Image (cartoon, rainbow, N blue to C red; front, side):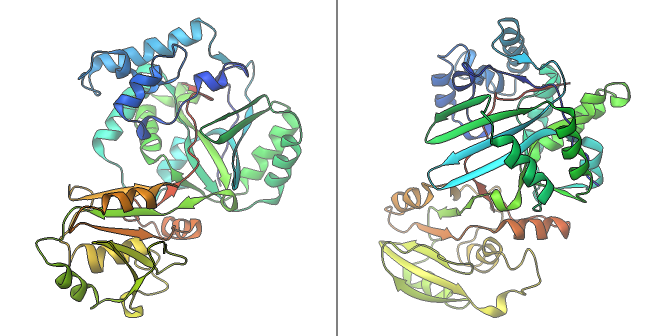
Length: 404
């Protein structure tokens, strides 16, 4: 059963939250980081501290991690970030014009992650794992939460409704997303949450696999037997029904040395292909919209290509890779092939359209992966193809820090 703990978060005041918080470290370019660094209280100084060093600095250099620790200590010394007096849970709500999601912020056990009680569905990259491990150890803190999900739970839903009926302690809007935070410091309410999570057999990582893996590595290096908090990592747990997944699209910069007609003929071996309107997007699973030389095509895979009970093989991202990208376009390893790029999010279709204005390049729009498909893969202890899920809105960094 899953353990979910309150903790003493290091966090900004209501007045400072908007200035301090920023997007996660892995969705910002260097240019965006340097622009954000013009604000002295921005959390970018902690999560992407190379922005404070000379341009061209190795982002994995020792001085970068030292600078991150110095920036975090400075924010504490100046009172920009303050620790709560007692362990708390927190509600974190994000509101967009057409979506609302509310999660509970706490900590989970690294040992339970290692044991599979907190389940993963992605592989991690060694270089990225090394980076976050060094960052955690230098700062003695986890500076970004792992994004978890769990099946709907009536008791947890009641707590969320009850707590969020009061005035939030933080409430601001940035980039068309409203962010709200409530502090759950009453012991009786905390006990209800603790007991409710203890009855949930498994938690699932939706996003943040590198943060989770790095936290486990850091815990092992810190000898957690006498440092309880170091054996836990910070997470935001959302009910599965709250989450919004968007399509994660593909773009290939050439046709693998083939003509347009050759590519179309080869695709027809495994897909039904028909021309469609220039605004058509996928409207259901097993619909893939292809952009090629000014024309959109609707692709439907032949039913013989997948088994409905194969949690990985039935995914559109799997079907596209196995029966089109690899045999037709020669993309054998999408993790390393520089000919393919991935575009997700609310502006993904527009970006793919712009890129496909280049002659003899090709783009694919995919219907969003369902959260229950993610859960099914994790339950089967499988690994989803790279770039299968895009969650939006993103969780901000700087609203909560877990010191270890």
